[in-house]
Amino acid sequence: MTHSFVCYRCGASLAALSLPFSRQDECPSCEVHLHVCRMCEHFDPHVTRQCREDGADDVSDKERLNFCDWFVPGANAFDPARKASMDAAGKALDALFSGADLPVTSADASDADKLFK
Image (cartoon, rainbow, N blue to C red; front, top):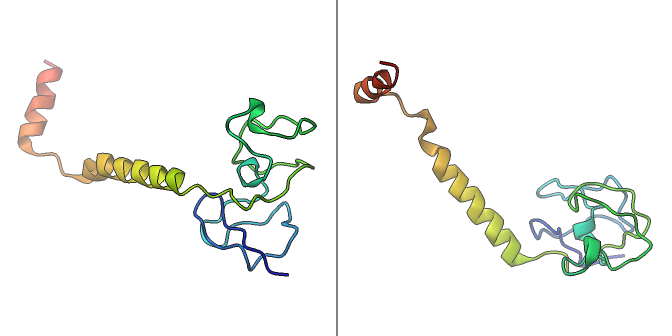
C-alpha cells in the first residue's frame, strides 16, 4: 500500500516505508526518528501540551522518539517555513564559526598580551 507521507523535518518522501511506521523507523534522507509528536496528526502547537488527544501522555520533547499509543502519522507534518527557518539558522551558525580556524596574527597576539599586563 502506498502513501504520501513526508518527513516532518526535511520533507523527504516516506513512501518506501510500510505502514504502520514502527517505533524505530527513521527518515531515509535526514535519519530522524518518525515516531515523534511532530510527525503525529494529533500534534498542534496551538493547544495545551501541543496535543489534541486528551488521553495521551505528556511528552516534553516533541521531536524525540516516544512510546505514545495515540501516534498516527500526519499527512501535514512537514512545514516548509519551519525548514527554511532552520536552514537559515544553520547557515548563520556556519558563518559565525567559519573564521574559527584562522591563524592568529602577530597583531592579534600583541593585543592578547595587553590583557595580561
